[in-house]
Length: 301
Image (tube, rainbow, N blue to C red; front, side):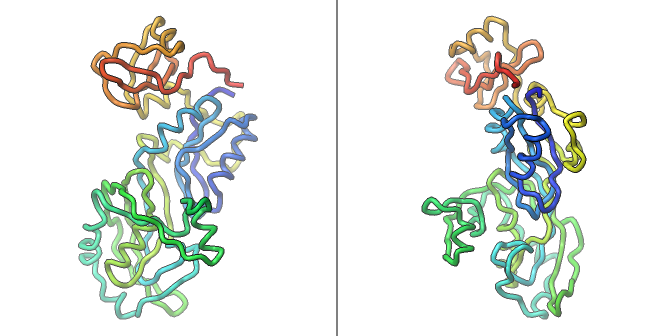
């Protein structure tokens, strides 16, 4: 199986690990990994690296991401999404009076560079144990706030009153573009706090990672080795990084750990390409470029 990226539209109920395991069977290799975990409840774009492309995932994990979310105001849950136990429900009259203008005003504090406390039911490690494991074991977990960037957070549907099990909620859809490491569940939670009624996520779909779009992704159901579309390494790099053509001699130099002339390029994610093949990922050091990973000469087996 050739090295490259596979774009998968993850279905609801699957873990990211489930998708990796499935692709290992289809591709016939254990060298399969993913960039950017999606919760089982979420759907949408998952980037899968096959063989040598697993090394490329390191440079894609930190890419910006875009999501379509459905947020419910009027309650809190232990997981900050619809999968978790409800902790408290707001009074119906408090929910009914919330307007789209109030939501928009509250969103102002959730845009730009913010400090976010991740959801307690998350994969973050606390004292060597996953936070979600500690919470499910009955422990109280308080995670430290961390900086994230919310490039846009836009309401995309008119908020609608919804009644469920005798309770009243307010649902609306939103599109969020954010930095890696952002918890969309936590944004829903914090919006609910701003409005003093609680909030959580009822649906989430990832539509973009960097320049990769879910419209170009494949469905996992029915996928076979013959139908699997693998994006070549160089095409994957061209979609996400600055491309730097290198000569045959520079390929040899890079393979031997030597630095090459930067030709004015700066940055930490530069893709070296030679004759239509991805050679290495480079970073600038002064007036030179050094390799952070080299791909040339690797086997796809």
